[in-house]
Image 1 (cartoon, rainbow, N blue to C red):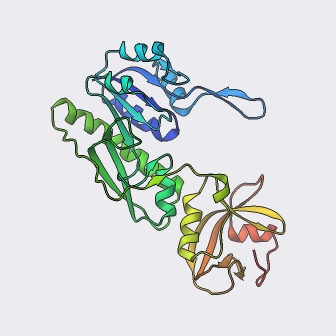
Image 2: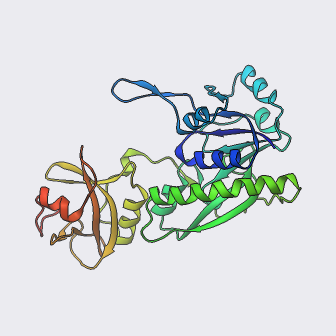
Length: 305
């Protein structure tokens, strides 16, 4: 099929790679415009932009799709479909309607749960046991379109946002060519999303990254894993901010924030139960296991975070 691909982050790259491998014609790739990065504020290409250029594909980076010129240029591609994977830009109705089969979005949740920007993080933070990837026919609403194809994925007890991201990206890469093959032979059925069970995966804010030890151990554990590796849930110890990147529920009781064990591990009391902080990171340093962390950062049993 003749396609446009619209995506920006690492999550989207395997999908584009599989579409190329499957023999689809990629007429153009759309990605967010290069952004200043680092101390020198040099413009950095998005992962999709860099991969597309390396693959010899035309890349377009409109600031938005509000201009008639950008809309007309998209329509002139004469597409069978557009594949949208974490593009990060609202598409006007004229763009959604331009391809013969419209625009298909791959979303990393089981809709209508976790519509919006951060479905992977929110699923772990909420303690969900399953999530998935769905191919959705795009419409004007935020992730409200009918579902065309789905794949369910279990969330493991030790999954972080990073590990689940990689699992779902791999599933999306396999699901998209399947959806297009079915679309070509007329084998896709559009199923409207249920009206019940709608939740929104709002963008992660810096203000919610601080760990609240008064919550239950299960909630604290999900909070830590859901924000790992970025932005990283954190606590303060001796006036220093420390990120907790991996944890697991542990045995123990105490006042919230009490350090219960520092013998090769770091166990902290929560409002109910305790958590074992498995991987930590000090500012400007690499992630460390609890044992290594404690050798360089003196925390005593009985102190309170």
